[in-house]
Length: 319
Image (cartoon, rainbow, N blue to C red; front, side, top):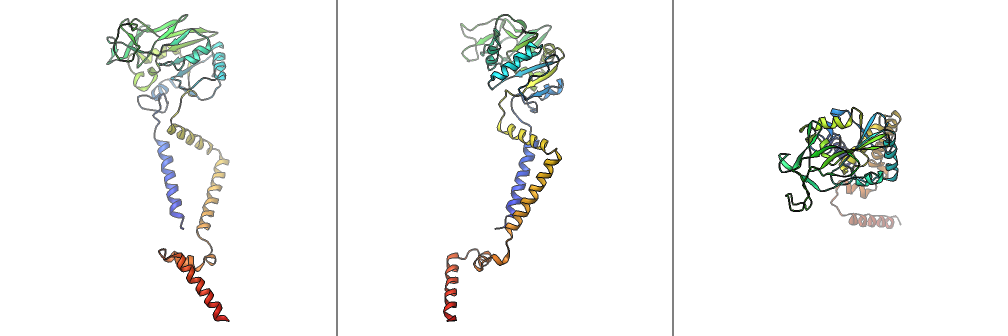
């Protein structure tokens, strides 16, 4: 069998796959390389953010540490790291809309929770009641499928209008018994030497929302000029993003000269092995194999019987 076409096809498919993975941007929520409506590419570009993928905490004195839309659990090690960061003077911003971050808030021991029900405003909104407006300082932030903050012992940074309500049953309309008032949507809690800010909407940072209303000014207002570090360790990446990350790490490894030399040796060795395996020594090929190579439709069993008859007949003729 000639393996060269198979090898060439495999290498071509592999090359095309690598190019597609490398050149196609991810579509995951909050991915800083995602240029679509749900990505953080504009936020990272405007604020020169740093992506943080390790369990260590950044420098407490000079950074704002953002946990946006967490979708995985917080380990005991995560909790202790975050506590130490806050107690040492860090600024932690937790942005979540449907309560995934409540596990962290409970572990931190603060009396603040994200309600989890959808906040709607039929009057003060941007195009739709699911995009309610909230007031902060002298500006207006536009939310997107947000919830509200509950608890006590906090300073309110932004709140919805008195016409907003919580859609408890999820039917997208106001029903009797559903709470309607001005709700806190962003609060600040003093924690040790640091500050904890809880926002009941993770979407204000994404590409499609950052430019609306005074959202950029609101972000600047709460981050107080610190260097922004965004946590990536509590997102669940898609299979495509995992493949892209593996590819990036592989290319980073290949920047090391020793790794490139080893790869070149392995590729050369594989090439020569396949080449010599594909072309065996002619003297080792039986007449039947040569015949079948020329006439692949002929029956092997018939040829073997014919060869046996010729061998036996030759022996009888020699006697």
